[in-house]
Length: 387
Image (spheres, one colour):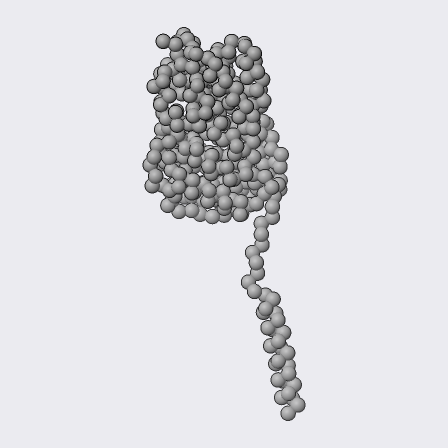
């Protein structure tokens, strides 16, 4: 009988201990990712001619060459390939590690998809600081495609800023709305025509710096193997990265190469805008003989990008207001560089910011220019050609 009692007692003790153990061992909480000094997101929309020519895979290969240069920072790529694969992946010394795959129910140029990707990036790789690289086609302020704000079904024409997902594009105001909640301290536009005053003015409150080109950018884009270490640093050397890109094309030695690039301090854009508006407002018109510096690759035909300083200098003619404007420009554009030719056009003037110059009242509606914030706040006062 005593053996039975001992057995019952042992059974009770074992059950009690097991119960305690079970109560304390529910499904373990997932380990939260360690916060790093910096995470860089490359938003690569390659479902277009760039992807057809494999420029996306070439850049991904360049990134792999610099995988050991990240230090304690992290490098995340959202890659929408031409071949239909859409994934968020992280650069590791051993190769690419997939974080998440996506369906194609949302365009990569929709605000819903970009917002989702940014949230996924922050969850997977939280950091004290974030940088953003925009990779795709772009054409600055020009309205040449549909806006896709919240779903792929919207087809309302608005200014194109960034991206080409098989013909679907994101406008500049949508880009601002998405990025205004994202906490990026710099935006590197590895795409064409984003260093315009119209784009900089729209994005002036969403980051501290914008790096981009006032002209088209060669399809090779940024040399990622040279720039990862600089852009992923806790305190990024964005001027060094811009200089690396410029020198890459200068030193490559191709006879038909070109490159313009600049680093814009977005915190200084508001003041430059106010001074530009004052100059526009105080000027009646300008001569039809004025020949602005074109920042397109042809010497004739329609042009949507001209050098901003060249126009302002012409309007002010060394006046005190013009001199003050130029001092503010130096605070706004902290680095600029341009090769002497872009196609058939000689670049004698490159201040680091392009702009559209209207000639008549009717030209304000060209490509939807009058829908931009820059027009609404500043350029509506721009003098027109004298009749």
